Image (cartoon, rainbow, N blue to C red; front, side, top):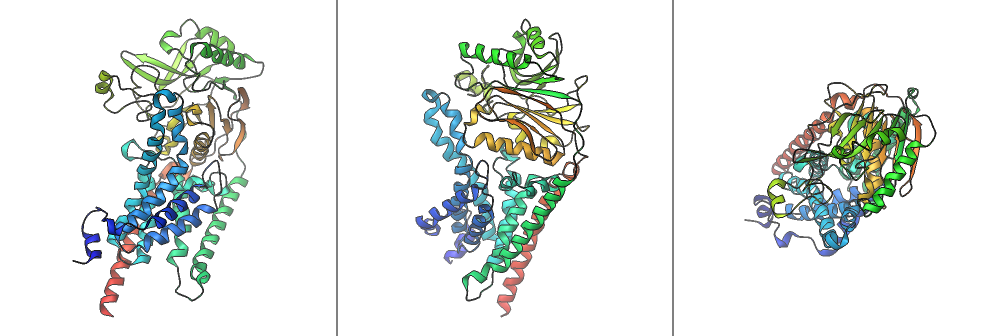
Length: 521
């Protein structure tokens, strides 16, 4: 049995002889990191399709399926290591307890994400021998893996390839195809120079036709986005919002003395002069439970001088919830929303009831051994305020939670505590994803963040007003108007996923015909 035959027959044991040389793997690692420079906060989006094009070329031309796997794994490690660099920050809040975990968290997160690049590379190489057809199959596989990453193992659609376009007009295409459509667009731009490669003498001319098509595709997408941005938005509503940002540093937030200071900031900022119909405090804004807040709620309501949307923890029996509660004038508790998409190991631990018996709990949860999940997405109806859908922190990275509701809200509210994410990249990537949710739904999104970035985002995903990281303050703003229901909100990711599956099918037919032609000639 030939070496190639063995590579295609056995599942990916990845024989050592099929692993590329270290210098090639380091090149792949560098290409992945260069591609990730398109993400926030760097925003060098032009590098992403170029670096991905080289990676697709290297993976498609690999002589063995195992070699393609390694190319994909190294490229993915570069992408996710840079994109997820912020993951070390939560472990440094209490470094004496969790600090030793930080490097392992980054390596494991990067490795786990890289598998979503490596496995499609291996499958494409195993099933499609012809390298051109393989490049098409590989591109389709990467689109599908980016989509699947938002679903399997509770989902983690962070740092999707398509997120590189958030600060450009191209992001407006998410209203038609969602963030996964932006991933598909980026990968098609990267694919074209490889797919239309010509065996000519001048190296530059080999990729030129495909590169020209990629530039034309970018230009058309840019123009489409500009046209959508040029369309007028509905007028702002009459509702006046006050967003309060106390700037409670995570390592001080639960300290008794400092928590009193942060509460004083919340009260003072809420009570400052200015018209407001709703005051919004961020996720877990206070250090006490809703169950124990009875005496202080009237004072909070008096300071707000309006209904108050309050991020707070609460207890129900032996269960604890990360919640958003509506506090009515006078201090009565109105509707309560419980976060339902929790962060694994941060807000809950799988099999937590059993593990809590030996003292293992989620380090982000301040009550019990972790939070319990709420029933699911819901719409809050506060008298005098347009109906809204609350999203607590991590929930805003999941576009699927914005579809399938019985009725459409008029705006989105994200209460978050991005102090966990540090100051380099995490908060900015989180903000970028919130902006995409506004574009996808055609709804304004209001963001109240503990340490920043708090923002008013209109239905085009444009930031109207914001408070930067590391400052205390407030935003007084009118609630922007909503656009009509977007195509993405009606049909979701089905067209993109279906097109990727069709591309896989066509790659298989193309490869089969190529093999038949080779046998005949």
